[in-house]
Image (cartoon, rainbow, N blue to C red; front, side):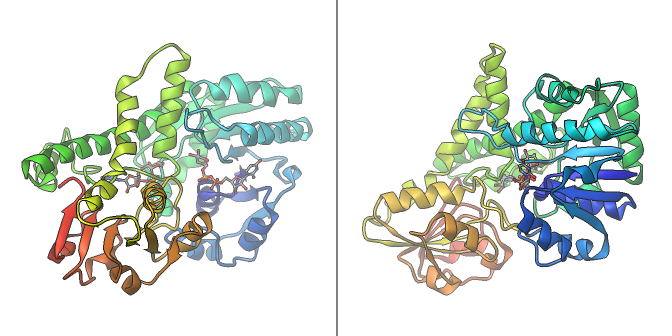
Length: 416
Ligand code: UDX
Ligand code: UDX
């Protein structure tokens, strides 16, 4: 099939190389010419994803900023950024921009084409915002073109693996023909397929990420209680996880969830609920707890040193190991508070330091050794290499459970 993908970010780029790997002809569109040139020349990519560089070298994808290249596509995926502000209001400019451009293409398109939304959107946005914009082409959804909501569930750092081995394929369809086209496209992937309507697919994405967030805030709340009682949260999680109704995954207590998806999708769902007059207290508490959890390392450190004039070392600024992405990383909030309290902050991360220092020029780029020589050390991302370090004689606040750090002179686990 001929597939076009709008937006060469994490989701758009991973989807493009994987669809090409599955044998489809892929056109990748982005407004960022520089990014496109790097992709077209197969240079070192601006984002780190396991296996992505290698797969890009293996497959062919056409890149352009010219939407006319998408004409005669069977499916056009929308993967532009959909960030959301602190109140969960989605920044939909990019979506509107892309939909407008696709409507121009639809005017020239002779064959049938499905427009599939892969960016995370609020409940009802595909029907209420995107379809009217696409119909500015003069064609009607369900007749001149098809529409689907095709949520992705890939985890950063392992995006290729998740795309090629999905736990399920959710297809939200405007009509049967749209859904049939998308099901045919995913035939190369072995996974259960669930066909449903557009807004249910939107909600499955938001609810799935919000459930993962809830599981993390739950175990962090249990952790905060366990710490008061001198119980090891990770033992509790192990005992809980033996029950397959609970499961072991996403029960790692610590400083909370970050990244471009969980915090944002939770906010989008909370704001969507309020828009329809429902007060989502549980989801709100999941979000609030996540915000306060990130402050716990600083509170704990204040018990041991005076922050003003101290030098604090941060091990790990990526929102999780295996990625260079710092979007909504907990390290951002912690660095902000430490700097505000008059501490000097040094940071080390194997992959994400460039983006972090660009965001936080006041933070000093450091080696692992320089971080370990600080007055105190905070572990904020559980990179494997931190399990090898010598913590003896140090003051360590551990936000991500690095067992070896217990050898420190003073060791505090955030919620254990
Ligand atoms: C995106 C959505 O933001 C997220 O909600 C969804 O869950 C997955 O897809 P991500 O791939 O991480 O997430 O976004 P980002 O890395 O910001 O990439 C978006 C790309 O779209 C960028 O390359 C940007 O240049 C491009 N873009 C943006 C366009 O091509 N056109 C636009 O009008 C705006
Ligand atoms: C998430 C979802 O997992 C994925 O399905 C969706 O498509 C996009 O959003 P990602 O943003 O890559 O993926 O991050 P994830 O691996 O889910 O981790 C999110 C955050 O939760 C990280 O900050 C991580 O450190 C934290 N986390 C995760 C915990 O604190 N404890 C856990 O047990 C698991």
